[in-house]
Each structure stands twice: as C-alpha cells, then as structure tokens.
Image (cartoon, rainbow, N blue to C red; front, side):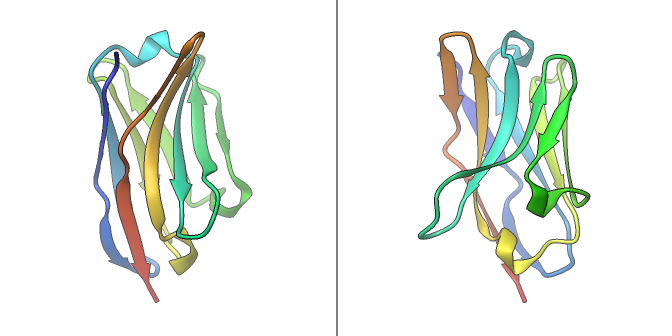
Length: 115
C-alpha cells in the first residue's frame, strides 16, 4: 500500500502564495495520474490539478493561471504551487495517486486564506 503525506498548508493572506508537497512512499511513476483535490466545508471534493505520466496537466477553471502542479520523480514528490490565493481557495487539500486498480489518498493539509 502506498502512503501519501501532504504538507505545506497554513494560513496566508489573500494575494499570497503557498507551496504544497505530497510525499509518496513509492514511485509515483507507476500511477497514471497524480493530482490535488480540495474540499471546503459544506462542499463536494473537487479536482484542483492533475498531472499524467506523460506530463500533461489539467486544472479546474477557478485556479487556472494561478496554480501549478509539478512532480519530482526522483524524490517521489508532487507539488502544488499556489499563487494569488483567494479566500475561496480555503479548503483541505488532498493528494491523490490513481492508476489501474489503484487509488490512494493522503489525509489532507488545511489551507486557509484570509481576506
């Protein structure tokens, strides 16, 4: 079983930046997708950003141009650089590893953006 551990969350003022890190206990290259999801209180979990083995990325419209997902295969980490943060970005952010017959989640890291 693969363990995913998120870090980098915290409290930041609107307009500021945070960089989230997802550390995996196994090679992330075995997965078809690595992604970041978020869930705010009272809302459904949504995809924020995803990167495939081929390096293709997708973003939810609300973060397009502000967030960047990246990976370091050697270090077994996935990052989410979040710039120009808005109060609406406040949520628990989860790391996800998805592949054939595999789907792993971290426990999340809280991001709070004050206005």
